Each structure stands twice: as structure tokens, then as C-alpha cells.
Length: 204
Image (tube, rainbow, N blue to C red; front, side):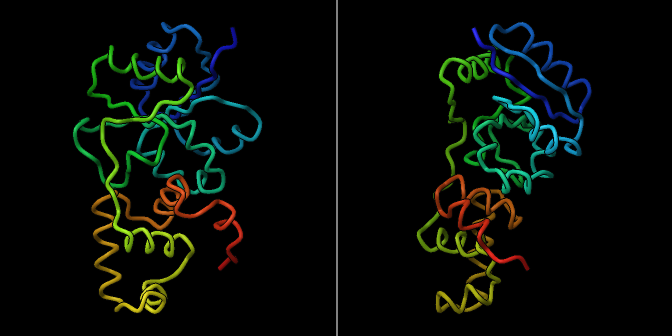
């Protein structure tokens, strides 16, 4: 039986080794590589095919550009969260990634999530329902992802720049995403904009 290849991208040594120990007790898993940062992650992924990437939420945020360049990687991401499992942290969205694990969860629950990945091949995290954007907010996310400034968005939608800024604050509050790159990833994953549209945009 072919094993699913995992890589671990976890900054904490103890957490990383704890995850290695847990995975080693599960059948059908091969740990391909361990990383404590994302410096060599991109080059590794160019050479090696992986099935799942367990990554710390802080390192995931730091490597947002990598996922914009290859959003298919998001389908392989298992986000390792270090906060309360019932609260959404700044800079993350439950809908951004394939699945998520909270360090505060019981071992049995973590094992169950990983087993679901192996058994189903596709696991959607339902611990936190993604916030729903209004049609206007969705349009603004799309325009932000296309590289438009607040003033350009305001002109396109016949709004004031202040109104656009208010919408963007509401979007950030709902999604927990503040950066343009993070919103772009969100837009791609949720079919608000296609990766082809993003990559075809002229360089600044």
C-alpha cells in the first residue's frame, strides 16, 4: 500500500518531535522531511512530491507568497494552530487551508483528523465555519486581489474611499486576514478569482 508523504514545517522543536512521534504510530504515513522554517521549503517542493504539509500557523502566514504562486499547495496544508481551538486567530481563515489541528486538542481528536485525511483523501475542517462575506465585500476582495488601491476600488464601485476602507476593515474582522497576499489566497481558494487571473496581472 502506498504511503502518504508528509512534511513537517514547525518552528518549535518540541512540537515538531511530538508530531513526528504521533505520526510514526499511524499506518500509511511516511515522513519525508522536517523543517524548522520556510527558507528551503519552496526549493524542496519543486523537487519532491508530497501529499500533506503540516505547518505552524506563524510559518504559514510568513510563506503566503509561496501559496499564491502555487495555490494547489493549499489542498495539502494541515495548519497547526497554537491557540484556543474555539477562537479564530489574527491572520488566519479556516477556509484558507485543507485542514487544521489545534495543539490544545486531545491526542485522539488529532489522530482522528489525520486518519480522515488518509481515509478520505480530502478533509474539510468544520471546527470553525468560515465567515460569509456580503456580495459587496466579495467584490472588494476580488478587486484587492487584482491589485487595485482603495481609491481605484472606490472609483470602480462609485463609492467613497472611506466606505471602501470600512468594508476592508469588516472583511479583515470577518476573515482574520489583513494582508493583500492573504486575501488573494482566500479569493483563489474560494473561487472569487482564478489563479490565471492573478498570474496574468502586470507586475508593478
